[in-house]
Structures are given as structure tokens and as C-alpha cells.
Amino acid sequence: MGLLSLTHTAVLGLTVEQSCPSVTKAEKKSAFISCTVTNLNDSNYVHWYQQKDGEPFKRILYINKGGINIIRDRNHPEASEFTVKQEQLNVYILKVDRVKQSHSAVYYCACWDTSVHSDRNYSHPVQKLSHY
Image (tube, rainbow, N blue to C red):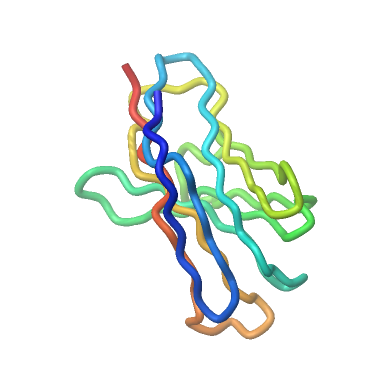
């Protein structure tokens, strides 16, 4: 079960928001982690990262504004176990079909303008996923 609270980050008009900081799921159950990103333009992508205890961030995948192109990171060993979809105009849902112990981590959504390839990143810690 998750605790409900509202957190958000806003930079240069782009807002990343999350309302549920923690999710605990039984193994083999599905887990959903949402991220609301407003003021995206066509060159923005929403990226999902995973950070396990004591490890660096690992990008899982990213998706374009329209929710059509999903690109999984080839360097993430479990990327194929995750999917993402655009639920509403601004809401992106990361899904784990069958939770397992190795999925326990903090998940971040981030976005930036790929047309300029700058360091103007907008990121936010989204949720901690635990199993039981």
C-alpha cells in the first residue's frame, strides 16, 4: 500500500509531479508508478530511472511525449520487465508486470528537451517500490 502525499518539481515551466511516494507489492503482482509531467513539447522525452540501495542510477526506458515510441535501455539488465504508457495527456505510468525482489528500488522520472541536448534536466524521485 502507498502513502499519499503530493510532491513536485518545477523548472522553467516544466513540472514533474508524483502523488504516491511508496508502493509495496507481493511478488508476482503488478505494480504501477505514475508521473505527471506538464508543459512537455514535442522534443521532450520522459525517462524512467531505477536506483537500488548503494548503486548508481540506471535508466530503464524512455518514452516520447505522444506515448508512441518506447525505447528500452540496452544497458539495464531488467529493462524488458518494464513497460510504460501515456495514461492521459500528462500522465506516464511505469508498469512492472510481475514484481520480484530485484525490483525493490527508488524510481525516478525525468525529462529534458532532446532537441538541445543540454544539461537542462528536470528530474524527480518518484516512488520506492518494495516487495513482500
